[in-house]
Length: 394
Image (cartoon, rainbow, N blue to C red):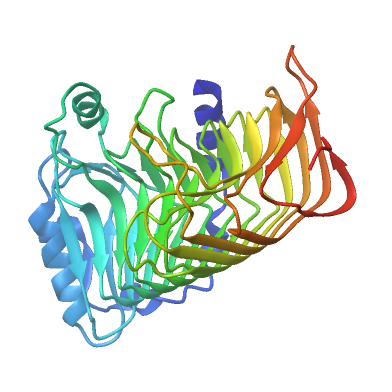
C-alpha cells in the first residue's frame, strides 16, 4: 500500500497542470475579481485560517464578475468552512498549499460548497482530513459522533474539481449530493488500509457527473453510487485496495429515487476486495437501477470481480428470505479481464423476479488461488451470454 501511495504522489507531482487552460469558471477572478489569496485576509501558516477563508469567499462571491479564493503554498489549519452561493459570477477555489483539519471534527462537511453555480476547485494542493483520531474512536467506541467528509458539493451546478488530493479523510473523502453537471479529473484520494471503510467519491441524487482519470486508494468503495443518480460516467480511473466501484446499497431508505444511466469504462482495479458491484437490501424498501454498463475493465488481484448482491447485509438481523422490493434491469458486464485469487469470480445473486435483462460478454478472469478453479454462480437469473465468458457456469 505504501508503494502505491508513493507512486500516486510521484505521478501527481509530475503532471503538468496544462489542463487548467482554458479556465472556465473563475479565470476572470485571477484578473482582478473579488477575493484573492487568503493571507490577504489574515491567514498564517499553521494557524487557524477559518475566518480568513470565509472572508475571502464572501468578498469573491459578492464581487461583480468572477472571483477567486487562493490557498497559497504552505500548510494552513481550518475548521469547517461552507462556501455558499449564489455568487455574482463564476468562482474558483485555488488550492496550492495544504489545508489541515482539526483532529476532532463532527460536522457533515469540512470543506463544503453549497448552492454555487460555475465553480472550479483546482490546484496541486492537499486536503488533509487528519482522520486518525476519528478512526480510532469509531473502532473502539459506540458513542462517536459521525465524522466529517473532506469535500462536499451540495446543490452545486456546472463545476470542475481537478488535480487536488484528498488525504486521510475522517469520513467519505468527496461527496456530491443533489448536484448537476460536475466533473472530477486527475484528483487523488489516499488513505491507509487500516482506516475504516470510507468511500472515495460518493454520488447521490445528482445528474451528469463525470469522473475521469482519477486515482483512488482507500479502504471503502472506490466510487459509490447512491439513489437518484443519473447520467454518471466513470472513465479511465484507477482504484487500489478498495471495495471496488459500487452501486448501492439500494433499498435501505423509503422513497429512494432510481439510479439510471451509469457507465463505468476503461478502469483498472488493483488488490480490491470487490470489483464492480451492485448491492441491495432484501428486506427494506423499494428502489431500482437500470441502464448500467460496466465495460473494458481490468481486474488485478481482485477477490470478487463481478457481483450483484441482492441480499446485502453488513450486520446481523437481516431478513434475507424476504421478497426484494428492489428491481434491477438492463445491466451489462462487458470486456472485463484480469486475475482473481478467489473462487467466486462472478456472483449474480438475485431474488425471484428482481433481475431482468442482465448480460455478460467477453469476460476472462484467470484464477490465481490455490483451491479452484474459479466459477460463476447465478441465483434466480439467467444472464445473456455473448462471446467467451470465463469462468463459465451461469
